[in-house]
Length: 603
Image (cartoon, rainbow, N blue to C red; front, side):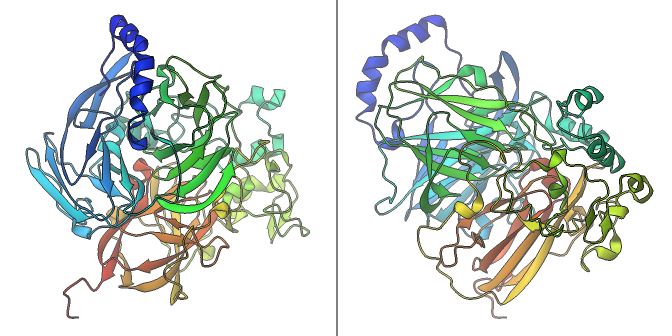
């Protein structure tokens, strides 16, 4: 946990700033991080033998102090610095009064070391130590966190950087690790209880009658009536948002100005990790272009952009080259514009850049309900008119592939009048019950679309189709079979699952043969984004770059959209597969992927 600095210590550290700049220039690039004089640099532990202790700590931000679950007493947990080719031993001691665990997110390892209680190991009992031991066979930016209860939301997470055994293809002079996260003084179990009682409990940005009359809500009366009759909210973008969350960067709130130093002209590598429980961010540095060089720890062909969306559990490495002797603001804005995290890049301590205001709240559209309008007279709104705001369109009277959207008819048909919840249209393997509020009638591949709220910004925005693997894909076999998995939920009841089933309903695991090549399509039947994570593997996004499909361990599936990936099931064992929105996983969007045979099996 960050220690408070008194005025005397702060002045003393500020006076030593020039000496620090001379000293830190002698350090390796990975050590040139943090903001001496403002807050201690991030604690760093290096392999091959690492001792970690999980316990309770107090945590202070914005002048308030709350209870946290931390590792070695810090939030975020210490940076683990490992090297490709080494064996690592991580001795984890539990000082809590409850079970705990650590999952090594994105790390390829034997499944017994993956750290998911009830799937790959029993968990770590109070006052016991568990030793994780595995070889490091990759390099890149990763992170680690609890997979027990809701401890992750209380601060149980930290970054991992694995240096390559050979020359890094990314050249840089300096490096900063940026851990994005969310923090609430409301206990996560209370947050979950509020959502079950009222799904819009934290949404203070709803459309209003006053907003309709003034035009501020950017909706027509027909749009408003349609959403009301469907009992849906066009601004239900994040379940939990800035009304209760403070958005952190490296454990610092927006007013605390975490600062990373640079010298003008340096190539600075920013390793950005979204370790949030429930928050998706749009990241930008006004006045500074970013070149994306890595996604989820895997190298990609450099692509320059001005802003990108980072979903929960994703990581992006970017290179920036500030040439001016001034401060730049790093902005991590919640996608519903309810708040932002803020940090600074500066040549000297004590500097700060201009902080941009929050942008206008986005409205969801028909496309976010999986109701593609591409069949309307040949007008393809998915590609021919990018960035167009459909929310102001009057949908009354429109014919959509047999679905009459007459304004007078919505109330009679409810969801089923729009094929939004029609059991006869459900996939054959889907359980259509109270856990399925909607079925997307026309889900589309949205990997080439700008994310919600960024459709109309006047600068470059990264999309998944921009990502091209730097190295050729290793497995060039065509998939031997295809499968479709639906992401389902009922927002009114806060129930989430795969194919209409929650994990608590004793669902069958997803089974693959070892080394099987499978094409998997995820279909989002809900109006929420879902970052889907598969443990123990990387999959290839089918994004139009055959042979160089980008490797990911987590992919964000847009509302009403679908994502296709190719998977080589080459790591035997039992692996968690889930939405990385922590409360969605806890409420049922979780399953187990089983890959057999195991090593040593004779069957």
